[in-house]
Image (cartoon, rainbow, N blue to C red; front, side):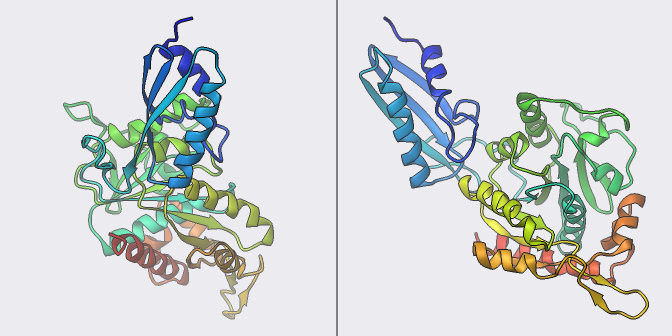
Length: 351
């Protein structure tokens, strides 16, 4: 029986990417398959260099293929993208999709409802106060909110080369699916469509001149996160949580996601940390402040800071003027500025 590429590809779909339910074919790391009689040769490209990951995949692939009748030998060429700009020296250099973007910063959370998008928006604005050429991309395809928080109802236009021109406000370049759909429209997409949208927001948007791109991920560890990490070399990831002990499992999920894909974890932000009484100044720990810091210690990642509960944060997000812009002297705005400073120090000093 003569082997064919499609047959080998279907066998490889049984091999799961370590730590995820998704297979290595749909994950996009299988780049080429060659067959010579009963011998199979594979070219795989990992998101980033990782000896343990390479060993696990190599062993699983070899076991799966050699169990199939007609395959007598399996050979590999496994390489990895460099952390910043492309493949390792063992492969021919490829032109990066976004050569002008120096730093990609992902903001994630293990679950919804922790204020992740609020943190992403205010962090992007805080970074823009300290650095030029900052962008903000909303990768939450199912629940976009950046268009609301930034108070934008316009639709983006295109260049003659059919690149989407990001909208701009408060000094940020912005892209969100919320700019492209009607307010009451619901996005019901499966994995491949989500992957296509995330890829398009990276490659088909005119980000030229952008040095720092903050990316607001959807909650959890699904297709949008994996697609983003396939498409760009992230400079680091930020985990947003609330202080409660019950949030621990969700923080672990987010940290493990970044670590399995070799993305540096920049640290944890504790949102809704405490509330300052507007009348007496007393700090009330509604959700037991300090949980985020304990989580950071437990998982051996930096603690970036705590953001208090502040009605002005909610108001600013609803009205399209985030608190870093509307009230820069408030404790909340100052907290975002301090967190942004730590993030910039971490990514710029890692080069």
